[in-house]
Image (cartoon, rainbow, N blue to C red; front, side, top):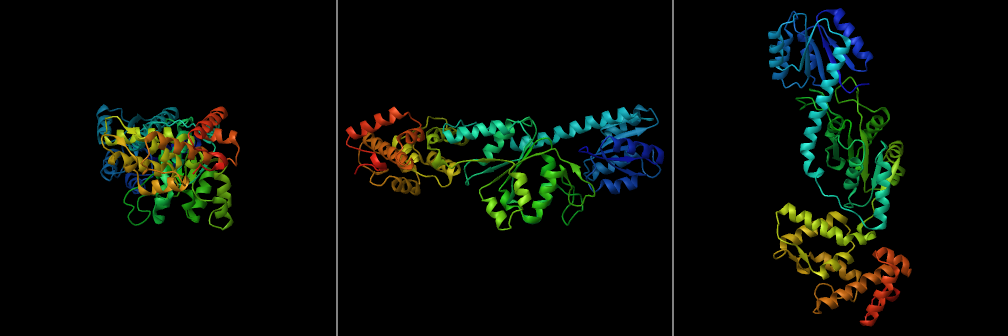
Amino acid sequence: MKSMDVMVIDDEPAIRQVLAAMLNKAGYIVCQAANGTQAFERLAKGDIDVAICDIKMPDISGIELVRRARAAGIDTNFVMMTAFASVDTAIEAIQAGASDYMIKPVRNEEVLHRLVKIEDLRGLRAENQVLRSLVQGRKEDQFSFAAPAMRDLDRLIAKVSPTDSTVLVTGESGTGKGVIARRIHQQSPRANAPFIPVNCGALPENLMESELFGHTKGAFTGADKARKGLFLEADKGTIFLDEIGELPLQLQVKLLHVIEDKSIRAVGSETARRADVRIIAATNRDLAQMVAEGRFREDLYFRLSVFQIHVPPLRERRQDNGELVRFLLRRGAARMGITHEITIDADVQAIFDLYDWPGNVREMENVVDRALILSDHGHITHGDLPPQLLKGARAAAPGIAVGDSGDGLREQVRRFECALIARAIADADGDRRAAAAKLGIGLSSLYRKLEELEGAGLAAADGAPAR
């Protein structure tokens, strides 16, 4: 099944029926109209992509039909047919808004060739519209992860990206599930096609079906023109359904049919259209638990979770914190137009490392942006951090002065280092090798650090800093 709806408009039944039969055989969705008036009524629904239209008709001419369609805002491409090889007629048809022109008798190969050209042009136009709306997101810098858990995640992305498999990305709020979805798209054969992100939780429930699958003109009150819908906007590309757990049960049924049949039926339309779309879904909710509670369809869950990727929270990948903070500082400074150098106190970085970041990367970015606004001449100190960050860091390292110590910088850094090592050893249940891996240093480096801290009058044994 092709992805375009075609209407054949001709007052001669034989020509109309032969063309329609050929196009049906080629896989297009085809309807017919015997005159201009009948054609305009059908075109007004807004779901016809191409009209192959005779110029000479008894009621209104094909050229007049094109003019009326353009005046009504109908986006159909017109390919005109005439038995008269008149250059003036061809020019008049193009000036009225027609896309192409053929001389009768038309050949099947010529008709199919024109349709392929129009399909390519329509696809490029839709893609350019999407790219313009997403250009800032496309140009975002890529962050390279260092934590072992994230390197494993990169390996999974590399494995699934070249396929057309549906992917379910799970993880806490703010972990970067959308970034993962975009990476999968950018590393896939669909990278040059649209990537359409959809926040299912932000769509009004009464408009959700129309937004996702489109509607015809007049399908409901307020539908003053046809809408393609986000799935067809993503044709040949990827649609990212964020917060998929917020999708109502009745729409879960329709999404399941889309996945199984690869076709879309717009609200108010009598025909389905093919949708060549890869689906990536994401959620911070426990879908398996929702299935058990009857709030999410089990068959849809299995369809979506063919390949699952779990994004760990920041507290489980602290090795990334230092470089991630610097990355967010660079990006925030560029966004705010800050051109001078940004510096950050060592104790500030230690606070970032100690804090658990319940809001994950989203929370970290907000804190970084706040610090950039409050900082004097680009120098960030603990005074530029929000109170909850200092409180969280103090709770993570009891007995260690955080942010308000009168000690010198070197002493504060040593105390923070001691707290971080103690925490890593405690998290690893005393396993020094595992603690070293979590800290991103070698085992010998960990023992050397422990000796240095002990020599400085600090200790990190048994997961607790010396008091």
